[in-house]
Image 1 (cartoon, rainbow, N blue to C red):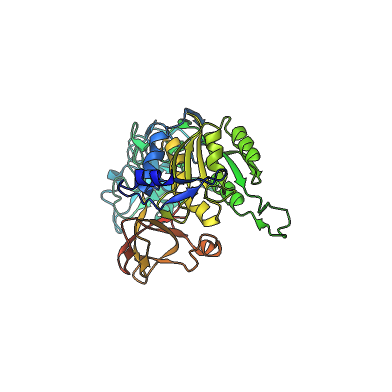
Image 2 (cartoon, rainbow, N blue to C red; image 1 turned 135 degrees about the vertical axis):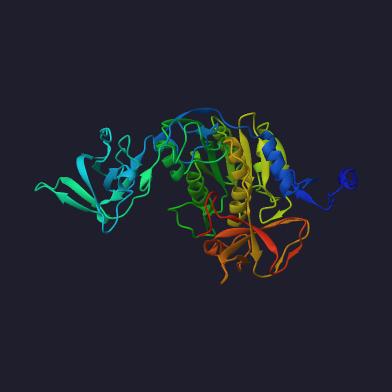
Length: 446
């Protein structure tokens, strides 16, 4: 039977008949077709549809994705107002002013911010505060520190003296100078950040229709793991994956609805996956997807009636990654157990799926210059722990960090990005372009 299966796939392009994996229960050799990173992304995209939407108030918009473009509901400013504390008047009154021929202008009132202004009177001025409306008929403001004013005993200005002409529109914020009514101010397909919310609030938006947050469940597998607060002696390994995934997902606008830990027991795993599949968009597991005796995830998916869409990606680290669909509403990612493989799987596979569910555009990675030569295994996409920093000329240069093994966390703590070498590239020379992805989406390098 083994020979027949090998012969069946031996002539397929890009398939190496030596790629075999062992099923954990039967230990029978079957062929595992390894797909490219780009093909994996296409399969993820094909099954991910934007989630339903609902009206979202302004104070809950952070990190949400609008369903449609957002347009300004008003002109901003909505009226001409003063950019300075000073005196508002008609610029024409000062046309003949000079150091030897000062023009004296009576001051007939005060306009504070939030007040309705009086009608401007030709040949006169009003004292005005920053943000206050410019009276009709007036078109300029002289800052208070640039003019001499006579004042009553209570500080009220009564007369100012101009010694030079004042240009029109000086220190005047014109209506609609910032935003126009109906102007597109935010394009759908992107996440709202605090500065976007500032703009929405300023332009009269109180509620935005947004996609709901994806609901994610996390299952950590492995009898060898010591969870937080449990002694790690006796051959146990401290669990670093679930704290990393939980904090990452929380920071990326995701509802982490359930977290479970199971040992290498198929019944435990089956029960946990089944429990997590209720009212969940994505289930993540760590560990149990490779070819070992206790790698139980692939069989659990099959037992539950799920459809494995791919298992093994031509990349490093994290090659055994598994992607499946449990039903029409629940997607499943089986991440390998090594911490860096988990980080790569989350950043470059789970995150694109979450973006699709939120109706976001595909992330664009950044081109930089390679500071040192990088070698990669042919036919494999490589995600390397790296640092990108400006050189003496301000150009961004990227260098791989020592300690690229998938179990080494220390080098990830020194990194500020991932360097990406596509599968068709074996080597990147110093000075050549190399793409990077910041460690976290929507953030630049830190």
